[in-house]
Length: 280
Image (cartoon, helix red, strand yellow):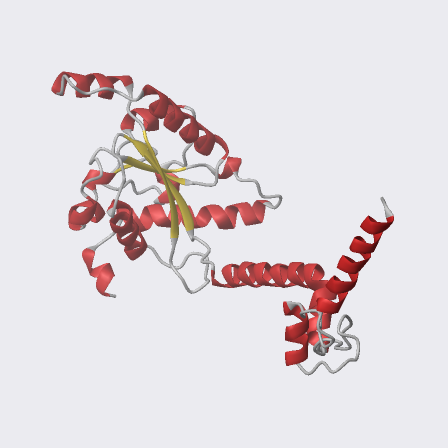
């Protein structure tokens, strides 16, 4: 670069510097404007002396221990729910099982429950009358063939039927449903195996007129069935029986006998039922 070129370059730099006003200031950022609006009076526009809002003890605790506190609160809520359910839960006086061709759906269960609880008393002495009812809709081969003959479009659900029979076998051999209401064919099989308490033992040797055999009562032959029209969806040939207490899992024979006693009483209450009982 020649001397003349150097002189022109120097003049341009001098003119550019002179063109900047003496009172020129760098424009503040939006952040600095906000800080000034909040009362910032620091001499350095690039530094803030604001320490932020004061954090309370509760907020500080939550920030430091929020996970532990959250889990503790959740645990307390779950414990309260469990305790409420425990103290408000009603323990059934008896456990009843039905297995047969009738499907107990909709409000049929409520009607059957009402009829049974009206016939019984407070067996466990807790001030409430309640039952636990299990039902298995099961059709024998003969019943399936009869349905097919009556309706050519009928299709049997063999998988569900087999599952219902398995549930029935589990309960009838080891379950707590000591009072059973069964299709006659199922009753006959279990009665032959000695699974039920003889009626002579339940009724002190006086066999009721509604007896089906030495072990069961025919539902349709009881006043309980005839008087409660709401439960006549149940097959009239359903047989009621009480299982022997041998399958009960009680360490004490005394407790086993006390538990079995309520089921024997239920059989008597249903067999000797009269409509006047509901008004007492």
